[in-house]
Image: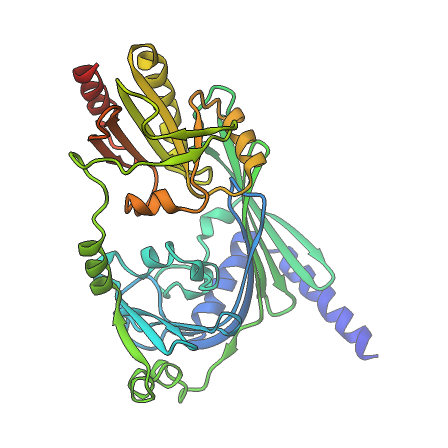
Length: 402
C-alpha cells in the first residue's frame, strides 16, 4: 500500500512538473537554495581537464552561512576534508587552510587579491566548494537563461535537466583544430522535493573532453546556534598550539630568497635527455643564440606559444638560432611524444622530469621563454606567458644579435 502511494505521489509530481518548463523548475531550485540561511551537505566530485586522461576525485563536507555578513559573491563557508587532514574556511575577509597533523593554519587575505572566487580557482578546493550552492542570494545559483531550451527527463524518481550551448574554440591553434566546442550542463534533481543530487558540466572540443561532476547530498539545515566561529574557533585553535601563518608574508620572504633568472644572468649549465633520445648539454653550441621554452602539455598558454616558437625556428634556424623546449612536468613520455607530434612542434624537447633545472632557475610557472648567447650563456631575454608585444621583442633581440 505504501509503495503504491509513493508511486502515485511521484507520478502526480511528474505530471505537475511536466507542465513546467526547465526554466521554471530551476527557478524553484534557486528559491529553495536561497531559503536555507545556513546548511551543510556532502560532496564528492570528479574532475578531468581537457588535456589529461586521468580523473581526479575530491570529497568533503561543506557548511555554509548566508545569515552572516559577507561582501563577496560567496557566502561564508567551512569545509572538512578528513581524508586529506585539511580544513578550509572563509570568514568574509580571509581564506584559511588548516593542516591538522602539522597544526598549521595558513591565512590569506582574499578581499585585497581579487576575492574568494579568484582564490578558489587556484586551488583543488574549488572542486569541493560547489559554487552552485555557495553563491550568495543576490547571485542566482543557476543562471536561469541557460535553461530556456533545456531537455527534461524523468527516471526512477529523479528529474534530469540538460542544457547545451556551443562556443568558439579558444584552443584553436592549427587549421585542423575544431572551430567550436559544446558545453553541456546536466542537473539531477530528487523528486518530489527537487533536491539537487548531481551537477555535471561537460566541455567537448572534437575528441577532447573536460568535465566537473559533483555528487551531492541533500542540504541539511543547521540550527541557529551553529555558527561559523563555532565550527572554526580560530582563537581556541591558536591556544591549543596551532600556529597561524600569513600566505602573503611567506611569498614575500620566498621571493626575496628566490629571484627567478633574469636578463644579464648566466644560464646555469645542464645536461638533459632529449625526448627523441640522447643527451644535450648547455655548452653544445659555441656560437649563435639559444631559445629555451619551458612548458608542459596541460598548460593552455604554452599551447598558444607553439606557433610563434615554430615560426622563429623556421625563420632563424639557419641563421644561428637554436630552439629547444624544456618540459619539467609531464611524466608519461609516450603521451608527451604523441602530443608533440599532434601539435606539430618542430623543435626538439628536453626532459627535466625531476624539476631540478626548473628549480635551479627559480622559475615559478610556465610558459617561460629564455633567450641566451650560446657561447657565454648570458641571458638576453626572459618572458612569462604570452604578452602582446612578445613576438616583436623576441625578433628585435634575435635580429640584433645574429
